Each structure stands twice: as structure tokens, then as C-alpha cells.
Image (cartoon, rainbow over all chains, first blue to last red; front, side, top):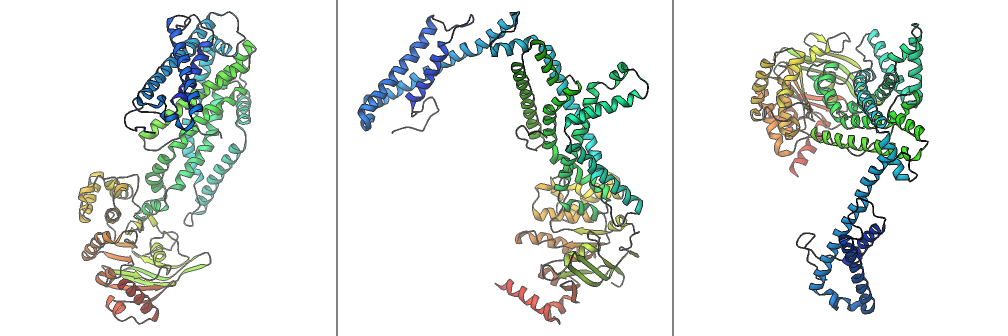
Length: 378
Length: 249
């Protein structure tokens, strides 16, 4: 085959023009076979007919090519279909097929969606059709859902930030190791600090966040109850949101502590040795040399923790935090439809995590620390 | 050269079952350049690391500045300020540029004002021939440049003694020279230096005394002329002859 590799995609010669073009033509025809809606511009009018002619014409040409190929076998290349002029014509023909198919996609895809949304907004009753119902419910209850999204984002953002601050404190406790030169009191203190941190991480990582959320909520509630406050007052101070935020913060603290500890351990021992050899104390070398490097290396993992919190904060709906999950449950209760609205929730969560991971990738690039993909849950 | 800066007595160190230092006695005098040579695993580096307590020795005494470093109540950070150390793997602070590497310790430990610390740092960087790299990122330097920054960094603390732990072993042969030149200049200025090295030519040329270590003991020590010219110990002779053979190949 005398295919030239030069030139761009449009001007270059391609193999499988008939096969690929036919598939696209079939797709276009199947799109156009669907019922037109009021916004359609490809109906039985001139453009619509033209598109159909292009599709059918290309299919006919391809069928002809197939017949010639089958009858001629190896001599196919010497038939008129393989002359340079014919190749050029069939290639350009296929581009028109693609163009027509794109138009069909716009018409029966995008405009169809716009049309469905428009009609759904005017509907009085939840439609039976799956897609329409999804759109109907999300449009009708967009305020509830958006409030849920906003709460989820706030909890994840605030929770991760608070957890980061706490984990810095916690990791300093975690890495304390009694030294031969410390006096007994300091030795005991260091042992206590390190073991407290270990125990905290052991408990938090070993229990589900849903259980933690319930325990924190009722613990706080009972605590306030001792002050003889009324239930309304307690709910005002120790609100679902606050207790949920505490849960996420304290939960993430355990994970971020381990992240930072890993970051600190990954720093070459030589960095500390050099600092100590210059007369800097253990604390000084940690603060000035090791910790800044450890935090920088941990930035991707800290970002991951944020994305995990977007997803995992959904369990907070059990204590009544009005996050996206809670909002979805409410909507499902209003309309008595579950599958459709949970799919909407999934899409919204996906958008949130996708956007955050893109944002983190961008920030990571700026800080020279690469981040990839959406992390798995804790 | 009579004033004894550092005196090591009966130093013992084990890593688990491995007995690395078996009763080391060594005196370092003011202004003296002592090279410690010996096969890998003979305890040279461990000895050096024990001197400023990066490794804690099990037993013995290290007298420095009138105090025993092995005493558990001694202010270690204060004494370490006076003992400069240069590592095989440079260990520059990766999160700091060249000048901040040099000023960090004087500013945090000695509380030297920033301007003064930078002035000293620039002077020391000039001594090691790096005045063009003052604001360079420390991770982007070549090995030889990194090691010279490490030397300047140690000098900024104005130490009484400098320890060099195989300072040229991680460098390729072509740039070993630039680091050795800096060390020679330092020796010429009268700095007290303890150098663990495999650079026999350097030991021969620069040192006042050569110490040969083998299997955790000091087998022989003396002037470079004695050690290289007429080693008394059989093991020393064997080590040096093998080294010379390698050189000739």
C-alpha cells in the first residue's frame, strides 16, 4: 500500500476508511432513527434528509467495496476503488459522514438533554422514565442537593485542615523516643507521649468512622446534658454539623499522623546527623530541617486525605449531618424513588472528587510534587 | 603542637554481636592533621562518629575541651558546636539553598544575627571557591560542590576540630581534587583535622600523623614517612602493598 505518512490527519491516507466510516454512518442512522423532539433541527426537513443520504450513500459505497473485495480477492488493489483519485474521494466522503454524525449527536444527544430538562421543569409529576426521573428530581430538589454538596465540601475542607494541624501535634508525640541522656522524668514523658499517640492511632484506625461519629455525638450530647441544658440548647451548640466535623477531624488526624510519620522517616538520617553535628538540638533539627522536607513530601497524601474525606463524610448522615448523602436520602423520601436519586448522588460525588483531584494535581505541579488519580477509601 | 585537643581512652563499641571498636586510645593535638586509614569495616568511620556522639560508644572516655563527652550530664549540643563534621554523603539540608545551609546553625544555635551570619558564610564560601553559588539550590550542585559547601557550613560554626568521614569516597576521581585542595588549604591554616580516608596520596602529603586501624584496634601510628616508608606491622604492610598494587594496575 502506497500510504504517505506525511501531512496531518485530514490530508493523510488511512486504512479501513470504509469499515470505520460505515460504523460511524450506522451510529448516525441509529441516532436519527430516534423520535425527533421540538428542538430538533434534523427532522424530515432538508438537513435531516441530507444527513440520511450521506449515511446511506456511504454505506452503499462500502457495500460495493465489500463485494468487489470478496469477488476480486487479492486483486482488490488493482481495482478502480484503489486508484489515488478514488481513495481521495472516499476519504473525503468519510469526513462528511463524521460531520453528519456529529450533527446527529448534537441534535439527538445534547439538544435532547436540554429538551428533557426543559420539559421536566414544567412537569407536575415525577416521570416514569429513568433518565427523566433523575433529571426531574435533581432539578426539583436542587436546593436541598446543593446545600448537601456545600456541607460535604465544608466538612471535608475544614476537617482536613483541622486534622492537619492536629496531626502535626500528634506526630511530634508519636516520634518521641527516650534517649540515654534524658533524665527519668523526660524519659517517662516521652514514653507516655509516644504511646498515647500510638494508642490513639490504633483505636481510630481500627474502628469504622460511622461508629466513631455516633460515639462522638452521644458523648458530647451526654456531656452537655450534665450542665442541665435543654435539648434545644444542646442541639444548638453541639449541632450535628459540629459533631460531624469533630469526627472527620479526629479520624483524619490519625491517618495524617501516620502520613507525616512516614514522611519524616523517609527523610535521610544524614539530614538529622548533619544538623546535630553542627550543635543543633534534636528539636531544632526536627523543626528547621526534617519537618519542612517531610511536609513537602506529604502534600500529595494530604490532598488524598481531603478527597477521601469528601467520600467518607457520607457516613455522617447517620447522625443527621445534612451532607450530600443526607440530602439524597431526603429527596428519595420525598419522591419514593431510590435508584435514580442515588445515581445522581454518585454523579455529584464523582464530580466533587474529580474536580478536587484536578485541583490538587494543579497545586501539586505548582509545588513540584506530583499527584495522581482519585485515592481509595480508608 | 603539645596542647592535646582530643583524647580518647579505651573506647569500646559494639553493634549487637559485632565488636567494632576494641579499646581505642588516641590523642589529637592542636593544629595536627591525623589521617585514619584501614580496610573497610575496620571501624574507622565508627570511631569518627563516636567522637561527636552520632554513635554512642559503650565504654571509655572522650576528653574534649576539659570535659568527658561520655559523661551523661555533659551539654552535648554545646560541645558539638566546636566539633565540625563532614560526611561522605555531604548531607546538605535539601530544603535550603547554599547560604542558608551555612547560616542555619550559627543563627539557631549561636543566635548570631542574620547579617553577621551571612557575612561569615560568604567569607567561608569564598574560601572553598564557591562565591558564585551563594544563592544556588543545594540539590542542584555537583558532588564536589556539595562537599565544599558542607565544609564551609562546618567552618561557619568556627570549630576547634574538624572530622572528615571519607569526604571524597562518593566523588568521581576527576573532582576529588577540588575537595582535597580545600582540605589542604584548611590544614595549612592550622586547623586541627581528623580525616578518615582512602586517599593515600593525600594522607602521605598532608597529614602529620597516620593511624592504621584494623578490626577495631589501632595497629600502628606514626608519621606518614614511617607508615608508608617502613611499616612495622605485618598487616599494615599487607594493606599498603595491596593498595599500591591496585594503584599500579
